[in-house]
Length: 288
Image: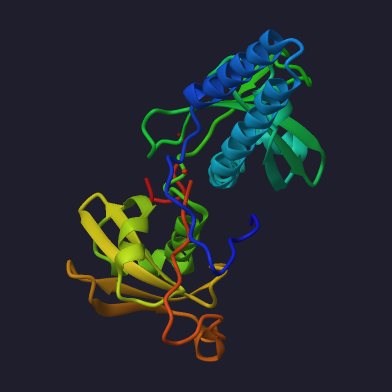
């Protein structure tokens, strides 16, 4: 899993998918800033100002996009890890990371986002097009047969990732474990989407490290609060169903480690929750 946030900060919610518009905006800003620099000519002070502004804007973009990249990497690994073609080439997937050199190449299509895939047998590059429907994540995923943006590509079969963030993925993993007993206990039918509810987590009366999630199913929706072992949000220790007013109701999950979990936050202090910046065969009949 990617590096977790500081226990004293909460990730801001941003769309699970990156957008070509955002990337184009950065390119346009870079061009305008460079033009201003050239027009400055001998005006050294204005030239330095233009360069500083460009650096600040690029750094802001990178910071804002960081969480989005982490979530999309997790979703992409889930989406393609069972595809026969990618397994033949890389084996078991160990890690997926953004391939920014190709993604931000001036010759790349604005809809194409490239990723490095490292596995037990080797490496590969895949290119994805994000779906406008956030619940579907990827419109297409292709294996790049080479190292260039114009190298031949082979379509990959990909599953839908039914979660929007790495924290939602943890909830999903628990729902899918133990023959899906936890998913069945929610009585909402096949689970279709799990979303991290940042706003309610921020406003809730629960002290961190507890986050709220909305679990959508074919037959209904349940809101749950997940208690984590510490404020790095790495391990879920408990899950409670909550009512419309945010009050804890039935406890549906408790880990063996809950009794000995160490809280890193003072008992009377509430830190901000973490912010977030995210088709094929279904994992099971309980997940669409």
